Structures are given as C-alpha cells and as structure tokens.
Image 1 (cartoon, rainbow, N blue to C red):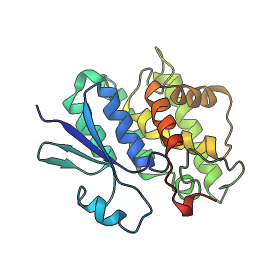
Image 2: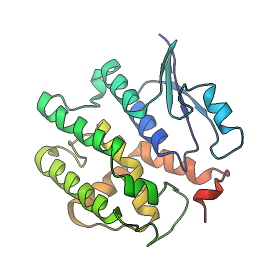
Image 3: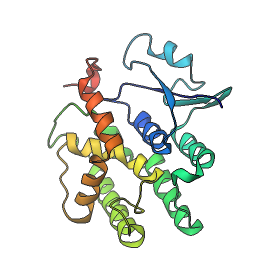
Image 4: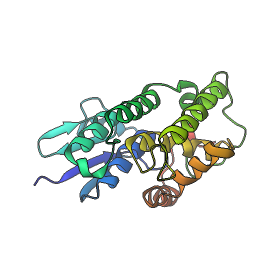
Length: 217
C-alpha cells in the first residue's frame, strides 16, 4: 500500500493545511508530512516541487497528486469510508458538503481581514465591512446543523466530519481576534478547539519559531 504524504505550510498560518491535516488525521492511517515554510523568497519554488498550483496543502498517494483541500477531503472520504468523514445519510451528507463548500469558497471578509495566526492575540482587530455579516452567517449555519443533525455528539453532525475540518481554521481566527460567542455557537467552538488532533496542531503551531511579517504585527 502506498504511503500518503501531505505537504503543508506553517501550522501557525496555513488555514488550508489545517483542514486537510485534520481530515487525514481522522482516518487513523499513518502518513508522512512535509512542511514548506511560507513567506520566504524561495517559498514558491519549494511549493512548486509538490504542487502544480504553487499552493498548499498537497496530498500524494503514490503517483497521484491532489492539490486542493476540498478535493483532498473528498478523496479521503472515499478512500477511507469507515472514517465517517461525511454523514452516512445521503441527504444529510449533501448538507454537510454544502456547508464545507460554503466555507471553502465563501466568508471572504473574515478570511481577508482575519488571517490565521494561532500564536497571536489581536482582540477587536479585523472588523472590516462584511466581517460581521460573515460571522452572523456562520453562527446561523452552526446553529442549524447542531439543531438538525448534531445529535450524538458535540460537532456539526454529531461526530467529526469534513465540515468540522473546514470550520476549524476560522475558530482559530475567532480566538485570535477576540470574536466571542455564547450558546450553541460558543459550545461548538469549544468542542472543536478541544479535539485531540486540534490540540496537537495548536501546540505545534505555538512552538514554531518562523514568522511571516505581514501576519505578525
């Protein structure tokens, strides 16, 4: 069996890498990890050795190269069906895919104005036009999923799915920028933050020595 290899960026900053890494961790399979440091003069050259787009994450399975976080999540769900990366019910699975895809392509105000920086603390910063609307939409999605599909666990669809992997980076952002929530949304944020895989990623991010100046004030 081929060994899976995931190429990621710095844990502290690379939100897209976190998504793919959490999904791969959830499969329980052994994999190799490679890191390309971001924000350096040779970053593009180094990533191009792994990715046709010059972006991370990239998953390699033998000769197969998968270079988009959502495509990686879909591939892992198909390759390891017992991992439960999507809900088993087709209709619920469609909702979970919609939720993950919305995070993948949307919420541009939050992503543009609150870049992920796990080590930092910038309470009150980043509240540019459109950010509050993005936050309100996210809260409504989380409340809807928890109410309709969250029985049997603390996550959006009960147990961990790709949908949670895709929202994990924004939960990091909210902690950095002091976006506080109560009720269902706050409980969901706490549940994701407490996941063992999430704690592992955060601890390693906090231990990193590398900095990308445009993200560190």
